[in-house]
Image (tube, rainbow, N blue to C red; front, top):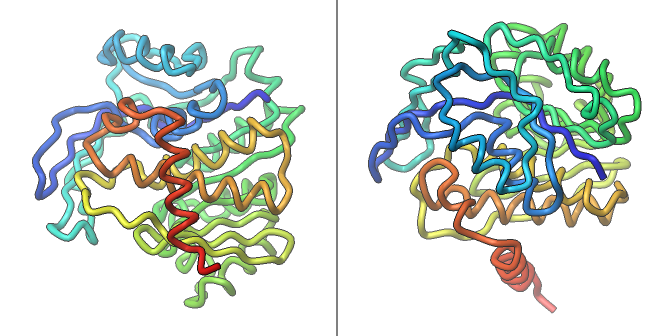
Length: 301
């Protein structure tokens, strides 16, 4: 099934206790697309500047990511985020963010992309997310991601996009901010009442909660001993989840539970190196092996 992913393609400068990565490839849509590409080909829509190296586009294409929808703005510069993590990775501080061409991104999708049946709206301005949905008359499943900035600064626009979406993926801090509800299951039900029938709450090292058809499902995270860079883990979760759903072409409760398990596993690989390096070094077989280990880890029969 055709899968479209929109959001940011960026340069990241990442500082952790394990080292520093200068101006490496990042962005919400980039991580999502790489994660989804393990399961299905991806159409990627975003905007970058002329400073984006051609080899990055070629690498995406080798991972079955179509880059026709990435607009290269002449004379422009690509979004650049600089962030630092605490030694225990529990806190992330944004030292600077230059939106550059992404700040003015007004998505106009290629004609082929407008036939997409599955779409993941990675983190970005709600107005741009809405513009994408309005260009997809054949969509069967649209999942939405967001962040604190849009919840506080663009709440009316975000609520409008939520009503147009079938599901929402957000972390525990974001869902509490959005709903003003401290209990995560109650918060998930409030989000569902706002529009998205499917709600997934990412809890980082503590796993994830799925709510669909009023039914909850909980899965712990993979217990990793190697954390290098958590950047993009949440995006990988959403991308892998959506990639799996697009590959099977169904959105049953069982399919959603399986999708959450794939999201958990792919995210666990992402944090084991800077940028997309770890994702580029693994295969679907590696993902399946770790998923089997997760299943045995949580089984008591």
